[in-house]
Amino acid sequence: MTVRRIPRAGLLLTGALAAAALLLAQAPARQPLPEEKKQDKKEEKPRKRVFTGKISLRSSRQEKETASYGFKGVGPDGRMEQAALNAQPGEMDVIKVARLAINDARPEELAAFLAEGNLRTKEKKP
Amino acid sequence: MKRGVAVLGSLLLLGLLQPAPAPAQFPGIDKVVKVAEAQRAWSANEELAIGQATGAKLVAIFGLYEEPRAVKYVNLVGASVAQHAPRQDMKYHFGILDTEMVNAFATPGGYVLVTRGLLANLEDEAELAGVLGHEVTHTGERHIEKELRSRKMAAIGVEAGTEQIPFGELAGLADRVTNQLLAGKLSRDKENEADTRGLELAAAAGYDPRAFPEFLGFLSQASDESGNKQAVGNLTASHPKFSDRVKRLKEQIGKRGWDKEERPRLAERYQENVVFPETPAESAPSGQE
Image 1 (cartoon, rainbow over the protein chains, first blue to last red):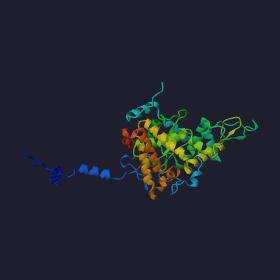
Image 2: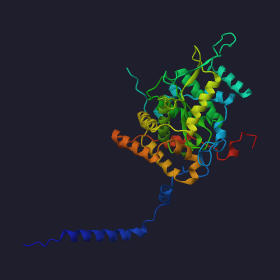
Image 3: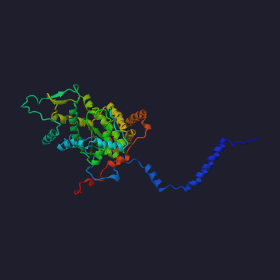
Image 4: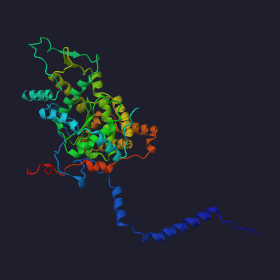
């Protein structure tokens, strides 16, 4: 008894055609969900941190505080202007720098911060 | 002059400078002796005094951004990274300069100041950790001092027989350091060292080290646009090419196998803590709008 073997290439072609037909038949029925559309749009969006003109602000997380706006002594080419470099610190500037230490992370704060972020604490040498 | 007296008074108040005895009482003690740069490195006290004077100058130029949550957060991320720094004989302090320029600075004596513009353009905490690791390395390794020394600009005038830096001398040093930070550049090997070791600090703290070169890659793209020149021009002029830095860092990451690890980026925590006002009007104190 002889068995007529279907050539492998032919078998693959037949399978591919059948799969394509199935896909084509299903395609019109499958509309992307609104959420999926939104997700696609989000992925296509360029990173928001390009700072042409105004710095990129995080619109959902803005709060009142005491920032003023501007580059302050930085020229259009990014170089510092001489007048800014000549500025001399006043009493308050000196005090503000000394007061930076007030915000140093305390050991217990740092430990909690590291744990919350799943970060590592420095191993103490024996 | 009046302002100078006020600053001197503040420094005395803070214990940064000791009052020098009156020349009339101690003849000769007012003589300022230039210490040759080859003789010795700056002492820890000198580093601190120079760092504070430089910090004050930077604050005079840009102001400080003092939104409490953002300031505390930068300090916590900074401490997370700095705890792994080899140099632990000085304290590291972190602050935010109130300018849209994208940059970060490290003064002698452990002061690290990032700009508001930088924070606004970082994507997550791991990127911030990379930047802070870079700056912690600069200050820890005394890069500014070494740079000035190599240019024969690190000499300190001290009062004969003491280690006290007279006010005028301190102001001059702060000017030199500030000019170096804002209008000069460090040598390529110092920048490379800050990149390499800074990345190690961020990785030691557990952050995803890939974040830092990713941010530099973003800056590289942004710096190609002329509209961003005011924001990144200073950073571009003072550092090696972003593309070279990214290449080196990626090689380091590959060699250490960090690219095969999943580590935290903490984008959400970053965005919860780094906040900015919507408009200048909104930032005005209540009752003044």
